[in-house]
Length: 134
Image (cartoon, rainbow, N blue to C red; front, side, top):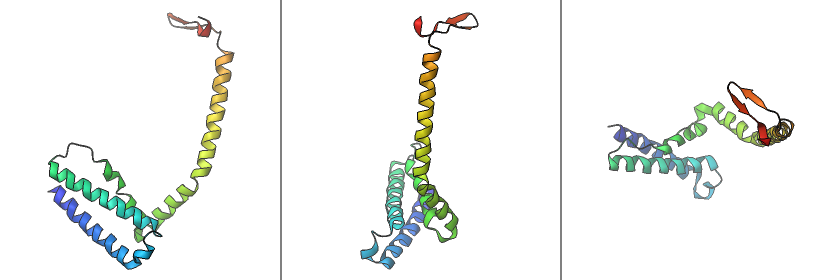
């Protein structure tokens, strides 16, 4: 029953995407990247639903379902979601720069810690760790 409902709703969404593609025209399809991404995701979801219904199994993980939030990006009711996702993607370069700097600082402190404490004997309970010189 749930597979039939899923296919029905995916068909409605597929008709919506087809109408949008017809409205913008074939020459402008490649310029609207969000609509193109939605089209590809919808086709993948549709194929996944058909395969799941044909196999009569709900036990396998359907990873393609993770693409469903992509349809929130284009929805005009969710304009704030679109803006937030756009800002996150624009700030990814700055975030990656900070992560590289953080990795460098952690690596430097790890190397210093290794060389400063290489010969120190540690006693933990009844066990003894003799460091790198053991």
